[in-house]
Length: 146
Length: 230
Image 1: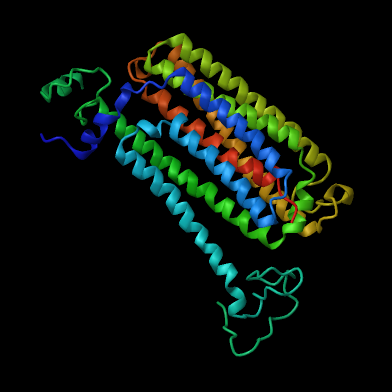
Image 2: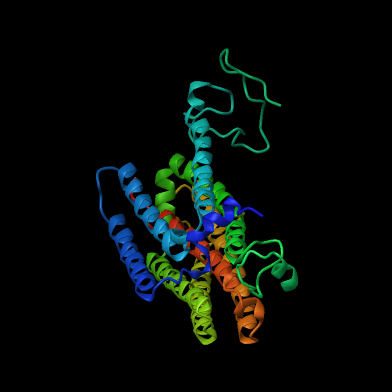
C-alpha cells in the first residue's frame, strides 16, 4: 500500500515531539506578562475608542496564537492539522462579515429597521411588544415582510 | 487487532495501541488530532456566534455597555485569567509526562489542573452571587437596584448582562465538563489503564480541550471586564 498524504505529513510530526520544560514554562510566563500588558493597555488611551479596542484584541490574539502554537502543539502538528486549524479560524473571521448587513441597513430604509430612531438600533422587530400598530410604510423602499 | 496490524508488513513495528485501519502510529495520532480539531472548530463557531452578537450590540450601545461593565470586579477576572493560564501550563506538562510515560507526573499535573479549575469556579460563584444580589440578572426584576447600573439604560444594561451570563456561563459549563473529563482521565491513569499508559493521545486530546477553554477566556476577559471608555 502506498503511503498516504496523511502519513507522509506525519513524518515530521507524530508522537515523538516532547516539548521541553523551559519552552512550556517560558510560554506560561510570557502569557502572564501579556495578561499584565492587557490590563495596562486597558488603562491607557491610545487615541480613540476604536484604537483602544483594536489594541486590546491584538494583545488577546497574540496570547491566543501562543496558546495554539505551543501549548496546543500546532508547531509540531502535521500540515493537514495546521491547514484545518487555520481554516477553522478563517471561517470565524468570514462569519463576522454578517456585521456588514447591520452596517449597511441605513442605505435601505425599511419600516421597523430604522437605525436613527432612539432606543431602536435597527432591530427587525418593533421595540413595543406586542406591537401597538402595524409599522407604517416609509417611502418607496418599503418592502412587506413575511 | 494487533494480529491484523502485524499483517500489514510495513515494517513500522507492532505497537499495541495501533488500530488495524491505520498504517502506523503517526497516521493514527494525526487522525486523532485532526478529529479533535474538527470538534474544536465547531466550538469556535459556537462561541464565535456569541462573540458576533456581543460585537453587534456593543457597537450599538457602547456607552451603556461601558457603564454596565463597571459592575464587574476586574481583580476577580484577573485572578481567574492567571489561574486558567497556569492550568494550561500544567495540562501541557501532563501531556509531556504522558509522552514520557511517567504516571505520577501526569497525575500530579492533572491534580493541580483540577485545583485551578475548582478555584476558577469558586471565584465565578462569588462573582455571580454578587450580581444576583444586586438584581443584575436578566429578567423581570432586572435593575430594581438602579445604583448598581452605574447610570446605564436598564434595557441595554440587561442586554449586556444577558451576554455576560450567557457567555461566561457557557464557558463555565465547559470548565465543569473539562473537570469531569480530566477526572475520568486521572482515574484511567490511576488504574494503569493501557488506554492512556500505552498511548499518550487521550491525554493530549483532553489537553487540547482544556487549552480551548483557556482560549475562550483570553478573549472574554478583555471584552467583558476591560472595556475602554467610548
